[in-house]
Each structure stands twice: as C-alpha cells, then as structure tokens.
Image 1 (cartoon, rainbow, N blue to C red):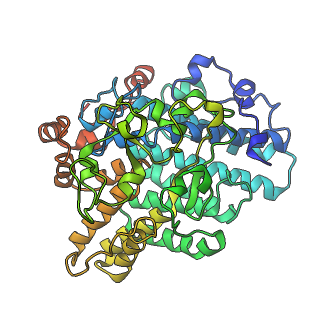
Image 2 (image 1 turned 90 degrees about the horizontal axis):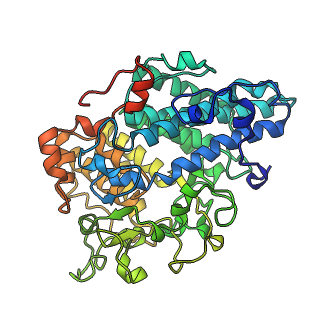
Length: 490
C-alpha cells in the first residue's frame, strides 16, 4: 500500500484516547483502545502511519542537533544551542522536545504492537507489522536513553495514575529491552520491504549496530555489522558516488539509504508546519554553520581568505553555503546556512513547488564507519579500518587522498581520524553530538576550543562535561510525576 494513500489524520488518536488533547501532549499519556479500531489491515496500516508520521517530526530536528556541538549555532524555540554553551536547565533547552517526541513514538508503537493481532489478516502480515512496531519502539527508546540515561520504560497501555507514578528504569535494563525488540524485528522483517517508507531488516540491523556503538560494546558492533554485511548485496546497499545528490529528491532511495524518513507528497501536502524548514532552510536559518567548522575541514589545495570553501574538503561546500552569495541576504548570525538536504531553488519559491527530501537516519557510510571504530578499538590499527576510511574519502565527488598510514600509525591516531571523518561526512545528520559524548573530557574541550564565536570552551572549563553528556529530565514532567528523579548536575 502506497504511503500517500495512508491517512495522516491519525484516526487512532481520536478513536483511542480517553484523555483530553492537552493531556496527550504531556509525557507519557497512553492510548486506550475502544475496541472498534483494528478491524482491518487498513486500520493497522493507519496506526503504523502514525508512528512514521512521528518519525517525520523527529527528522526535522536532526540538523538542529548539530547546534548542540561545535559546528553550528542554533536559534529557535527548541533551544538546542543552549546545550553547546551548557546554558540549558530543566526548564530551558531541547529536552522537552526530545522527550515528548520520543514518548509519543513509544505510545504509538505500543498501541500497534498490543493490538495488531486483532486484525483479520494472514499471520505473516501481522508478524511483519508487529516486527515493524518493535523496531520503531526500540528506536524511540534508543533516542531516550541516548539523551537522558535512565528513563521510564513501559510496553503496555497504562492508566493515567500509573503513568503519573512511573519511575525511571535503569539504562542497562532499557538497553536489554531495546536489543530484544530489535532481535525480534530482525528475525521477521524482509530485506526488501517493497514500500520505501517501510523499515527493513537492514534498518533493524543498523539501529542495533548504533545501539551497541553508543554502549561501546565493540564486539556487539562487529556482530551486528557482520549480519548487516551478509545481506547488503541482496538489499542493494553501497556507497553513493554523488555525495550531495544522495540528500536531494533526485537521489532519494539510493544505495546508501538503510533507514530513512520518507517525506511524501508535494510541498506540504502531508507534512505539518514543522517540516517546512526541512525543505527550505533558506527561509528559516535556525541552524547556522560556524566559520570555524568550515575552516576545520581538511586543506587539500591553495586556500583563499575571501572564500573558506576553496582548497578544502569538498563536503564543506556540499553541506554549507555562504548565505549572502546564495541569497543576497545575511539573516544568519554566522553568515552561513545549511545546504545539505536542501534543493538549489531561488529564495521565496512557493511551497507548493517544493518537495520534502527524505532524511536518512542510518546509511551505508555510517555502517562502515561504525564497523571501523569498533574494529580499531578491538584490533587497530588494522588494514580493514584504513580501507573503510579510504573508501569514503575517495568517493568520486569528494576525491580526498587516502589516509597516510605512515603518519596515522597507531590506534589513538586512527581513532582521531575516524572521528574527524565522521564530523565532516555526517554533518547535520544528528550524529556529531553523540560522537562527542563517546570521547573523554579532553577531546570534547579540544573540539569546543575551535569555536571562537561564543563562550563554549569557557563554559566547559568551568562546568565540566557531565551536563553535556545527559540532558535534564524536563521540569514539567517532574512536576507531574514526583517519582521521577533528576540527572546529576541539574
């Protein structure tokens, strides 16, 4: 069934909620079945569409997450940029946005998983739908533990009273449950699901690899990667030769796409107002690349003080644009704007002529780099690690030289090379914040020292990195639920 045919009004919310709309917006209000939904496969697909719709909401924030790092300045209602200066607190910052979005995904995933058995469909259809729900639930809990550590974990439809008294579950327990969901999904999901918006076995293996990476379970990363590698040819995964094009409408569903968010319809046909900036950052400029980030790209030729893109890693120009040169204006406080994931269209192009480009949450290069990081930690430096970095650096549209193995000649130097490659390869894909958190305090402070536009390094030197590694539990959630404890430092 084509995604465009699935209604996005989310019938499940109006049929199934026994609480007010105001309560729906608060964590973690449950969905209660009336018993009249899930009467057909179409009902189940609409419930599934509800989870993917929420994934679209999350995809909008992936570029904004880089505002929490040393490569961008971020402004706007979500306040991601406060984290980069350690100015966030339980009432100010991005934590409520992340918490609410993720728990909405948990709710909708639980609703599908717990009710899909009711539909009069073939067992294999039900099995795949449930597996998809479990993959998506695992993804949402992965988001939650990555930002908050211990979080309330539940898989059933709870009463309001139960939700108002639920405690945080230890991170290790949540991770175990996430991996259980992913294993169940991997066992069932097809390698090629047919509909491009539907998650695949490769997507489940990709999320499993990342979960293990964030836990620094290096052997777990290798195990998950090897399982993915065994199906990659059948799935058609591979390196995209055109770095910029893979993030545009013309390059959608290409060989790098493993787990992606499909924006469907023309213009804002099936998108909420919050998705609009994803198709035209020129009109919003909430994420503003820093000059220091551009200058940190590898120098590969003669540079020009008047044009920082000249003589540097081509990915700088693929991902970032000089705002004044591009649009003849200077709204951005840094003078630069995101080019990645935006079409080269004139400023002011009517929205009905724009298309929401897909956002990749896991792609081929990331899988290769996750393997390289784990392989280096276990066996580095090894030829396999160098080969991965060279493969990505030398793609035709990037054309960087291979890594100098005589200079980058030990595990520590190779680790830094891997992180450097990730920083530029995955800019504005929402990964660099989590990459930084895997490193020690000295590395984080060294990265923040590259920023000259504000007081980031000063903040880290005076406050340390604990506040950076975990966000606070939102104050409004603690006001609702006295059983919640706060993270250290808040």
